[in-house]
Image (cartoon, rainbow, N blue to C red; front, side):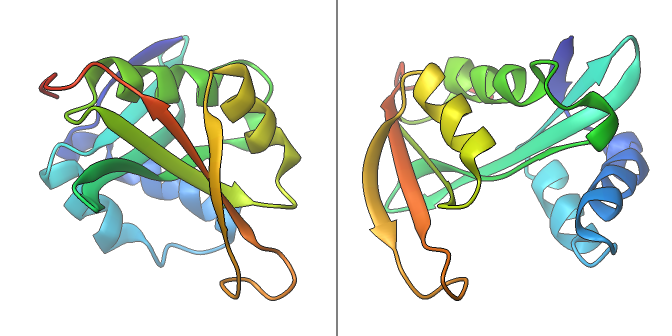
Length: 144
């Protein structure tokens, strides 16, 4: 497993993975913005793009992982964990947040296993499936 900042050359691979997971390429420009702002991490397995994570610091001045997307071909192989660990290790703020739907038990398990703690619930984003917010302290001031 190899993780690194995504580059513009990685955009097509990210869009391909994202389209496979969500069924369309509607986030292409958003992914390009994350890459341009150095806020996207790509995970590869044996040189093949396996997943990515995008984050920013717009959540009350704290780092927030907005997306963690893993190709179905590489699930349950530690890709999400490696992507999140990269962000924890290089987090530009002392607090890191992420969230997932109540129905996403796999992501909840990853969060708990990595030391994240529950930080709240947001209702009304997805009908009948509240968003659970998680938090972990990081080493403040690292530069990505």
